[in-house]
Every structure is written in C-alpha cells, then in structure tokens.
Image 1 (tube, rainbow, N blue to C red):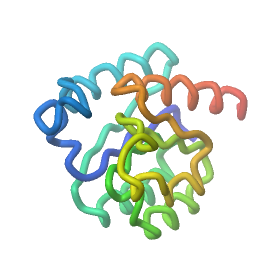
Image 2 (cartoon, helix red, strand yellow; image 1 turned 30 degrees about the vertical axis):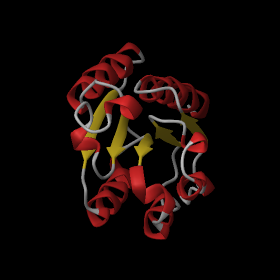
Image 3 (cartoon, helix red, strand yellow; image 1 turned 180 degrees about the vertical axis):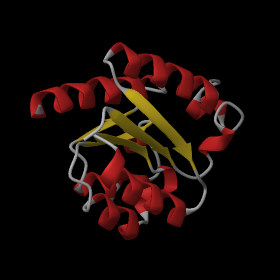
Image 4 (cartoon, one colour; image 1 turned 90 degrees about the vertical axis):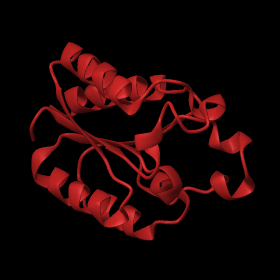
Length: 148
C-alpha cells in the first residue's frame, strides 16, 4: 500500500461553489482539493483528487486505486442513490472507504436517504459541508495507521 488517498467526486461537483450555494456553500472544488492536500500532508499522506460526471470513469478510478491507494474518500453525489456498479467496484477495494456528502442527505428528498455506497463504506460523513472531506481524511489516516 502507498500513502495515497484517492478522493473521488461524482457528477456536478465540478460546479461546486456555483450550483445551489444555499445547499453546497461557496467553496469551489479547487478549494476543497487544496484543503484536502494540506490535511493529508499533515498526516504524511498524499491525495489523488479526481472528479467526473461519468459513472464508468469513477469505476475505473476505483479499480486503479486497488493497486495505488491506501484508502478512498468518495462523494458519489447522485450516484450514491443509483449505482450498484460503483458499490460493486468499491467491494473490490481492500482499504478503508469513507463516503462523504456535503449536505445532510437525510434532511433532503426521500430518494436521497438511501445509499448503495454505504453498504461498503467504513464510515459516512454527511452535512458537515466541505469540512466533511477533511474529517474523512483524518479518519482514513487513523485507519491506515492502525493497519500498519
């Protein structure tokens, strides 16, 4: 295992800071990436930070992570509620997986209350804004250290 955390972001997160700021805040995905890299660096870890609107690309990155990452932090966005394929891919990954949601999905529409990804996740962070990514990095850092 390497000291790399894959931080995977699903559809529409490329519009973070522009799309529904009343729900998702004003920080951009680039802001989140910079904060995540700093947080990982504080633990002696590195980040591979990726975003795609395409389900197959997220799956390909999960497959890549099998050989290159110690952990995955994933905000699957809308794929949370629809993608058995992402769940299946995550089930092939041996390291820790933390699921992140910027908004509190449990205070939103009923269809957002179900997550396929949660069936594999070692932890779920929701409703903490973009700070959820930093909390997830702290958690996987502890899990990685405990496994060593």
